Structure formats: structure tokens, C-alpha cells
Length: 210
Image (cartoon, rainbow, N blue to C red; front, side, top):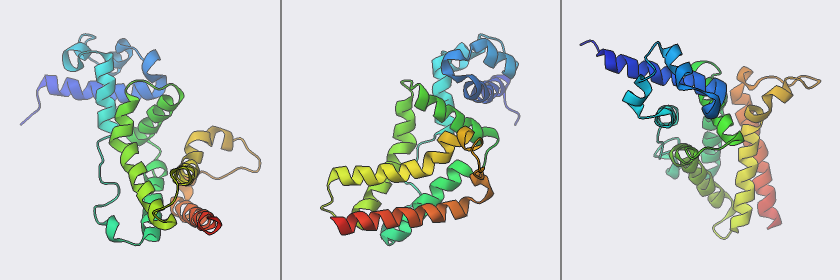
């Protein structure tokens, strides 16, 4: 059965909004920009999504779907070192394996939210960041011990997140450095393996010092 024109228009608006919000950010994007790209009437945004803000929330729901079980449900039965490696490898693949289309738009919108947070940032945190943060904290608690101070867990967690997000946040600078640092898309698995070894060495050092 063919989809109705209304359904097609709603999808077209969502896809167009992803592109426009990624390119211009929420504040600078206009309903006219989005409707022009979607070849839709300017009244279509209010009809299908209630407002530009409602459309932006729908975009975030689409590209940051709820993900309560980060990587897999059976990871709790694995050794913590293996869980850490799987966590880092999965996150690296999610961020760096693809750089075109919806994936690129996802991270462009994410970076704009980091630079100028909107109230919709709560949705990103609840759907995707919080499950990953919970998983990483659980792994670190197993590696460092149940009596590890919260501040130490927070430091170690922040260090790993910084390693993972460095290229995403600073790639324009990295492209201009001499000697040139290669783009991670060339070998994401090697990058993940390095971050795992580096992080595990740091964790072991923290544990020995404690």
C-alpha cells in the first residue's frame, strides 16, 4: 500500500530538518528553509509537528533513539577488561566509522548542542549518554574496586570520554597540524585498541596508587 501524501510530507520534513539543523543550528534554521528543502508548504511544520521546536525534538528522537542497554544485555557476565574493550570499540565505531549522511548530521547537531545547549539536550542525555555513562561507571567500579571514591570514578570516566571524543571535537584543528594527524576513519579498530590499552594502563596505575 502506498503511503499517503501526509505521511510522505511528514518524512520529507524530518529529513530536511536533519540537514538544515545540522548545517545551521536550531536558532538560525528557519521553517522556510526546511519547507523549501522538503518541497512542502510552510504551514506543514505546524500541521505535522506543532512548531519548529516540535520538529527539532522529532529530529533528536530519530537520530538519538532511546538506548537503555548499551552494547548488549549479556555484557554483565563478561570480565570487566573485555567489557571495557567492547565499550570503547562500540563507541569508536558509532562515532567514527561513518562520516556521511545521517551519521554526519547526527554528530553535527550533537556538537551544536555542546556549543549552545537547548532544553532538548536533556533528551540526548536521557536516551544515549546516560546509558553509556552508567555502563562505563559499572565497568570502572569492577576494575578499581567497590570502595573507589566517586571522585576517582568520575576522573577516570572523564578521561576515557575525552579520549573518545577528542577527534570529533577537534578535527578541524587536527587537520591543520604539522605533521598531519590521520583521520580516524582510516583505522577505527586500531584507534579503539590503543585507547583501550592506554585507558587500562591508567586505570591500573590509579589502582596501584590507591
